[in-house]
Length: 266
Figure 1 (tube, rainbow, N blue to C red):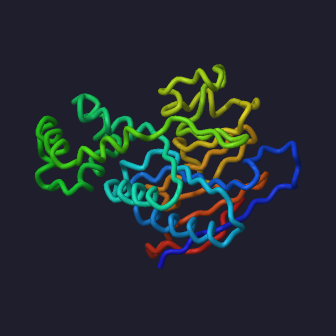
Figure 2 (cartoon, one colour):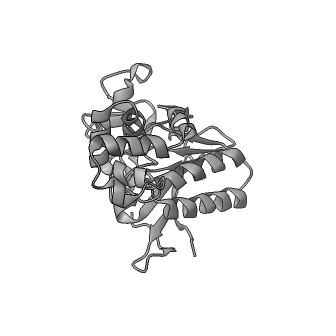
């Protein structure tokens, strides 16, 4: 039932182009936001794509925001953990993971979390909707604390803030272009939009990020945004990097609700 959308964007072999090290392959996956159906399809597609190609040192990077808004955050976390047990998968800490983790110790963050898709996350852990929706904020908080396993919270805390591979830097939201890479603040890596998005000059490495929704992957030269809004668009995108080449795999939901094959439009 599930297949992957594939479109290949190739570039001329040129030593001046950004590249990942020889013998390596990277799959970077955009914001999942609780869409287990799309994530499961893309997991299968990446495994198949990698197996069909020349042997390489392969790394999968999830760009963060695994949780919130979509219906199956708990299962997305479980699948990510299972995938890590059988291949190299590194995961970035998004702003939604930050809100989720902080919600356990701060009631005001919990209130903010609920307004930005956290309700769906809590319900994905089996909390009774009929009890949760009319509950006071204190009662709802207690339900979440009881339902979410401590190991899931610790797992989210283990996510990274920045990953470098060759000429590419992977972050959740972006970077502050006024600040050196090694001096970036965690808040910016997880939350920034401007002045990052409108910055036209090179950052040094090409920054691959999610966080800001775009209809199609945005390759701006100095940055590549791949959050295609899975929770509302029904499309989850991965960027594949090998040598100087760039291509995309995408899992997308059809009008009938199945994940089908269709080309990306550049």
